[in-house]
Amino acid sequence: MAPKNMKPLIDIAKEHGPKAGKFLYDHAGKIGPTFIAAQGIIEKLAENKKNKADGGKIHLRKERYDEFNKRIMRNLNDYNREELHAYKHEAMEFIEQIEMEMSKETKAKKPLHIKRRKNWEALLVQIDGKIKMKDYLEYLKIYNKDEYTSTYFEGFERNVKEFKKLVEKADSNEIINFLVSQTNMDPTIIRNEFL
Image 1 (tube, helix red, strand yellow):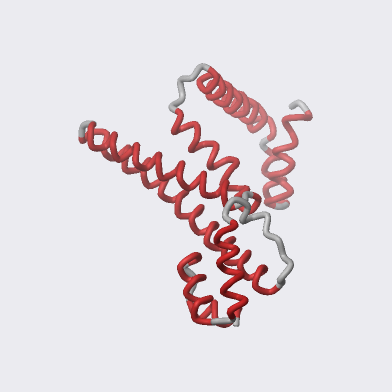
Image 2 (cartoon, rainbow, N blue to C red; image 1 turned 90 degrees about the vertical axis):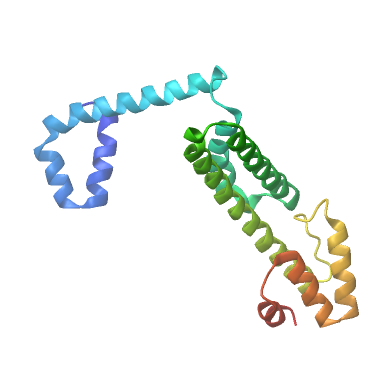
């Protein structure tokens, strides 16, 4: 077996301990060719997928869903509010498209559309939750440090100005109401952390 093909097997042995290592050693003659064949199949599937994407045979929504799962959802912490809202609205738009397709097409495709809609709704919930949490944390930073300038809120300065005015007034009820409306956080949590 070639050295490059041994690394995954060695990793399995390291992860699962001596018993796995002994099994791999005892059955190396049978596992090696099987592993090489499986690796070839995986590479061929990846190549076919890339060819479909390059040839425009993959639906845009499917391509975007894959990108959301592989890149965007993993990096939600890195985006500012404007970018997160753009992703949120894109997901909402795709859900609307699926709803329209579902109403126009036959019942046979309904389960497929329902699955797609649920997938996009799951992404939307995560994005929306991240927006609310990051909003809350940024407002907390602004509240605790007067000279703090939030890069996260670029493009949404009106909300920040309104919040700073409320902080200057020092009216705790107005601050709590503002934060509840902006972040949907529990008022008791807000009261504990802000006042």
